[in-house]
Length: 537
Image (cartoon, rainbow, N blue to C red; front, side, top):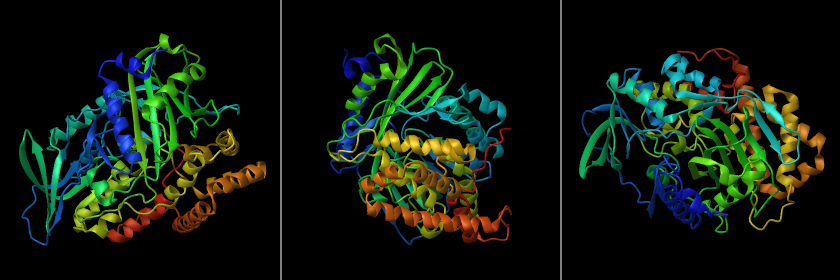
């Protein structure tokens, strides 16, 4: 049987070397170090560096720096371009800085049409422009855990958006309307003054200095500003992901949203996803871990991927025609979202930890919060509310996000814990069985990382009634401390839901000041009230 190295070296783009760099970064993370990365590793998905991250110098001064050339500068252009275009449409002077070329990969982002609707509602894209970037669509998606029944769901992660096409359309519109994109310009230093922030970049060996009212940090999980703000903290949880796109799979029009085929192996529960792609079928193997030194490398996870793929998809791996491989590790932190650590700097997207620790892609989370973020940044600029406290109101505590940490903990098997082999499968099968019986109003919000009090309570009560011994076993495994922490977030979710319900369906009043409006949004999103069963237009 070919080794992982032999398989990856057969694909153009040298993914084997990128995998080794990613593994060195992951090994450093397990040793308590921080490594820098531009993106998730893999052919066409970014590159990894081999050196320990150097903290970005951030200087704060009470001095007046002078008139700003830009209202907003966005550091990190992949999803940053989306926010930049939204602000440019509102009349702001906006620039995007990217450390490399601003281009998306070919591997699709899977999303639903309902989530993409915000792009049309905000008039960032026309229906025709969005249609050019949608290259696949399927239904239904499967959920199944080992020998459990299979549940089938429609309109969840069923649309494939090509990032390279998507970004090309956005880039053209942004530039045509006066936006600026500075490619191959990594940010190397910042100076925060009383009236502006100076951003120093390097381009072709020469320093460039820009002056802006506000900087959006959208440099991703491994943003040097995020690492500096977190003071080198190691992640509380990590999602390891490997996969690839290939031709030669049996013909199938459905996808897999979350599937398991094995019990716990090597202190890991393996999960699968599979989606029809424009040039084949994409399959992912992922698992949730901590940073224990004995956790597997990405190369070792790839070996498990190739070993278990035949049984999962009913294929001969050697008969597949591989188009590309993808891989990476996604850190997550309990202290999330990360509020603003400085005046005039706001972390957005993966830099802020805005997405659920159960997710390994930030596209859906950004689309969910995009209206709130654009409105909030607009209001902050109008009110000149660019101090640290005011900006932190744009990334507030969300109890429904904090609650998901216990769910990841249930799926993350401690090293040497000797859990029953099928414990994770049994817990998930019980939970999803209860949610599926309750219907879309309970199941679909959870599948989009939106936790609502009614659905969560219904699921917990149903699990206790159906299998109280299993629930007691889970409580024993995760520990009293984790359960008490979770109970506190549940109480806050109840309070948020009560206050949001008392407000009713009334729109946000125009008479509210900046702070009051942000607190209203915190209740609205923190209770999951922003989610409604979709009506696709």
